[in-house]
Structure formats: structure tokens, C-alpha cells
Image 1: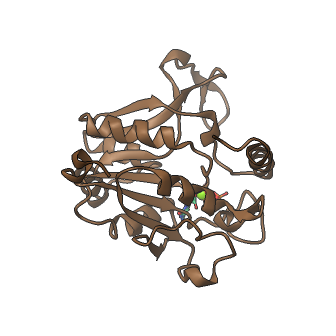
Image 2: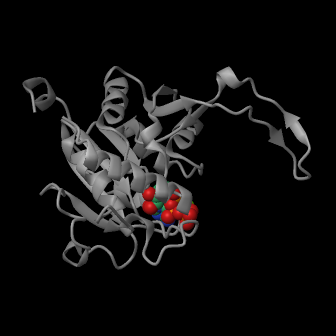
Image 3: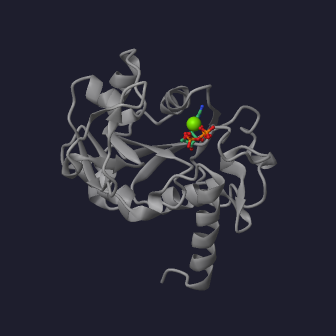
Length: 239
Ligand code: CTP
Ligand code: MG
């Protein structure tokens, strides 16, 4: 940590890993599905551990998984000593809320990251932190969309064609001024992602460049993609 970092509040990270992974249809919760011999969650934790300025890490796991000594081999290898493990809730937002409650209150920036986006490069985390440090209330990684997107009604009739240039497919980590994120979760508003919750409380959230590697492991097809990625990394380790 540099002197400049030390004078700041530090970065808190909530990794949400409490989902069951119903679309993946594996025998264990998605975060504990092995890829190249390590659980998916281990990759996400390793990246957070490599990020500078992290003062607090809360890993939110499925009920019954909060005893790290019972985790499969390799899952906790990179867990920093200051990490806290808590059980999540029924919805992702319940899990984020449970994690946020345990983030060190001295952190002035909080990132919320999906364990399922386990291969997000550390550079994406850095871009998000930098944007919040530069004054954004919130910053999320996003990529331009390739397909033309249509909105439809309940009968499948197209109701609109948003201009593609104005669209971004967003990823995690989503980063926020800590007070703004806490207030958004306290507001009682509901939303599908953390950025939308913060938007709903009247704050501007900006999009920074995301990365194709930040894809979300959701279906067996993406699990195979993750396996290929890990195999490629093992053949050509990053220098
Ligand atoms: N998540 C969570 N708590 C929940 C639901 C989801 O912490 N109650 C986390 C997941 O572990 C994942 C991230 O939120 O890292 C994104 O959710 P998703 O990809 O939908 O994972 P699951 O909900 O586990 O998968 P599915 O929707 O297929 O059941
Ligand atoms: Mg889900």
C-alpha cells in the first residue's frame, strides 16, 4: 500500500457466491464447482487478493458453507487473513446486503463482485476503483453490445429497438462510494443489480470498459468456456 492509499479509507470488496447455480445444474453450489482442480470461487478470491488497497473482503457463501476448513482443497488458498465469510440469502440482493453489513466501515469505496465472474482481470477492478476515486458515485464495467436488442411485450411483439450505440452489457465488479451504496441498500428500493439500486436513489453511475473475460459462468456452456480459459492460462501463464 502506498502512502497515498494509506491516507484514504481503503477498498472493501463483497464477493457474492451464495447462489445455488440452478442453471448450471451441478451437484454443488456454482461457486464450489471445480475448474482445473480449483473451485470457481478460488479464482475470484485470487484476483481480489492481487488488487492493491483492499482493506476488507467479505465472501458471501451458501448456507452451511461458512466454515472455510470444510471448503474443498484450493478454495481458500488465497483468502487474505482479514477476509470474513458470511452466509447469504435467498436473493442476490439479500446476499449483497449480508456482505455489506460486514465490510469494514473505514472503507470509502466498496466493490460488489459476482464469484460467477471469476475470470475478471484485475485491470477491470482497477478501472472501477479509479473511477470512484475520481468522484463517480458508482462505476460499472460494461461492453458494447454486438446484437441488435429489441424490447418486446408479453406476446413477443416488438415494442422498441434501442439504439445499439447507447447500450452496454454490464459486468462486475460494480464499485461505489461506500456511503452511497449503504444508503441505497437502506432505502428499501429493489433492483436487479447494485448499479440500478444506486441509480434509483438519484446518483449517477458511469460505465468503464469491461473485459470479455469477465463473462458470467451461468450455463454448462460457459463452464466449458471457463475450463478452456483455465487450460489456456496453464499452458501460457501470465508473466
Ligand atoms: N448470488 C448470491 N446469492 C443469491 C443468488 C446469487 O450470492 N441468493 C450470487 C451468485 O453466487 C453469483 C452471483 O450472485 O456469484 C450472480 O448470480 P447468478 O449468476 O444468477 O448465480 P446463481 O443465482 O447461483 O445461478 P442461477 O440463477 O442459475 O441459480
Ligand atoms: Mg441467479
